[in-house]
Length: 112
Image 1 (tube, rainbow, N blue to C red):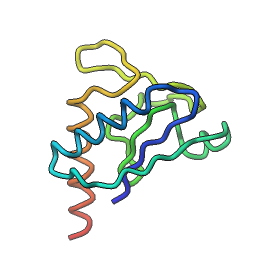
Image 2 (tube, helix red, strand yellow):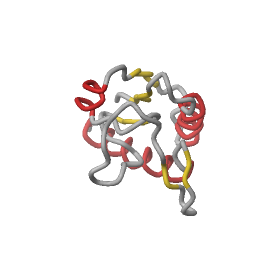
Image 3 (tube, rainbow, N blue to C red):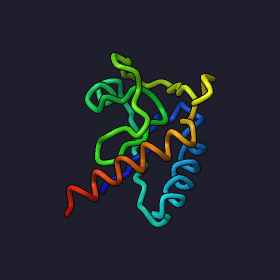
Image 4 (tube, rainbow, N blue to C red):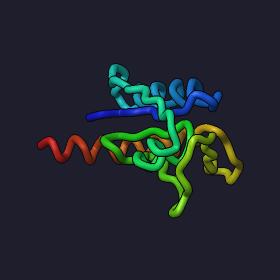
């Protein structure tokens, strides 16, 4: 299983997102899961990766808190909608945990 945090250098939110990701993984019983930090450096790379902004978290290529359909790619800061409707530069902790739980279960099921 590959867990990635994709970011671009100009966005200040990726350290906070990394901390949230590590906390969610620990809550789900995966405190030692490796998280790969991947810097997206060009607009072309962003388009190739489907990177719609920093920070973006992926588990085996799937986003636990997917962006809205048609979200443009690019070197920009990502905006997440929290469960209460407010906007944030990092994902809602509960939505992130639920999405990770679902994706990790899918990966583990495929391995069986």
